[in-house]
Image (cartoon, rainbow, N blue to C red; front, side):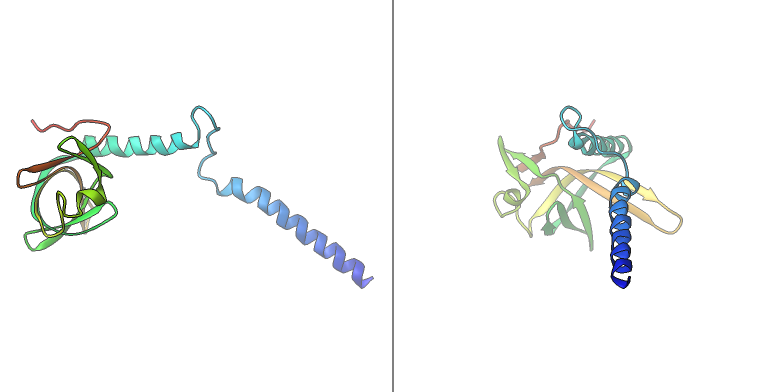
Length: 160
């Protein structure tokens, strides 16, 4: 009888666990995945990115930053403006003299490098809360001396 009880208990545990695996993914999902093919899963990521860019464009103010490049990690460039470090979001691809460069190639000392004094044109977005202010800078142009790099974006940004 003891073995029979153990087997029944084990089966109940397995059934509950299997049922949990079937229910949990649908309960924990933020939104149902899009069907594959036209409008596949990648399209929801694309829509989020479009919404973010639209928000930045609608709320961003043009701001020019001048300072020394201190460091770069992935898509964040740290620029020393005055005595303060400022983090600037930089796009993945840039055009320089008709050539397309990625961020690593752009900042490997040819044409630009760490320690260079840069002029960076950005869209600045500011969030103000009761006790703090958050500023984000999104670069679309970098210039060092006579060399200018323009961000490779799906739209053009012109200053008036």
